[in-house]
Length: 106
Image 1 (cartoon, one colour):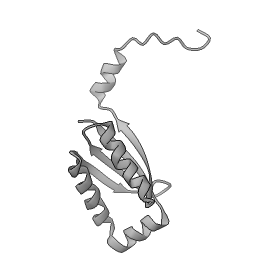
Image 2 (cartoon, rainbow, N blue to C red; image 1 turned 135 degrees about the horizontal axis):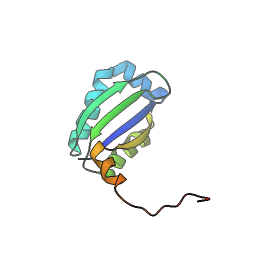
Image 3 (cartoon, rainbow, N blue to C red; image 1 turned 90 degrees about the vertical axis):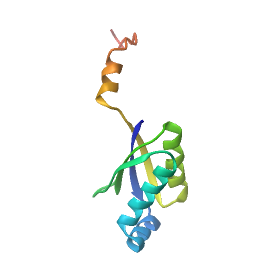
């Protein structure tokens, strides 16, 4: 199953919700929607800096990841960036593909 990472930056309203309901509740809610959409939540981590939370999940595919990201973004509670993660075996498979690319000036 493909693996994704969401980088989440909460809005002021989103942070107020975290302060009211708690961080564990937010992680549990994301676990529920991930499972309801055929995936599993691997990890949910809060962080310092521009990104408030990093979420890693296994999901059925790109459309499922996009649907969840759009729902989060449309809520106004958070901005979200989706990163598709690759396993080492996928990178090894990719490195064996001859693309025919020629760099500029070559």
